[in-house]
Image (cartoon, rainbow, N blue to C red):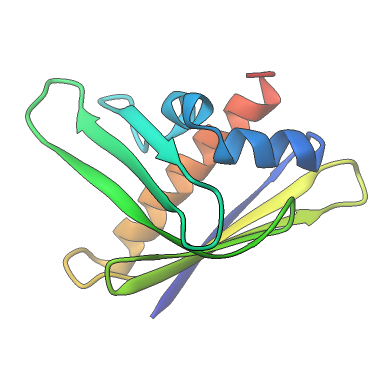
Length: 136
């Protein structure tokens, strides 16, 4: 099952793309809630290149790596990737009002309810939008 989340960001696509693909920026926005944070990130933005983000509870009680491999890249338009047995895609769709719709579509996992997964990924995307619109 595929899940999609999206948001509109009022910024140029080049700025949105850069914030989505730069490790120092990812560390700033990649969290679903205030009690979590991303402690490190790496990006090798090319087909076959790897990415990873270390996400941890701020109290140190739990953490995990979100990691995968890029499978298709069209600069300022599309990132496709695999992570484990799953895949995902990020679309950057220009809007007529000088904004960009960012749509993330990913394979659902079986451990958590679909709605919980949707809410978590949407919260991260909402943080991303706030970060970019605040001017980084």
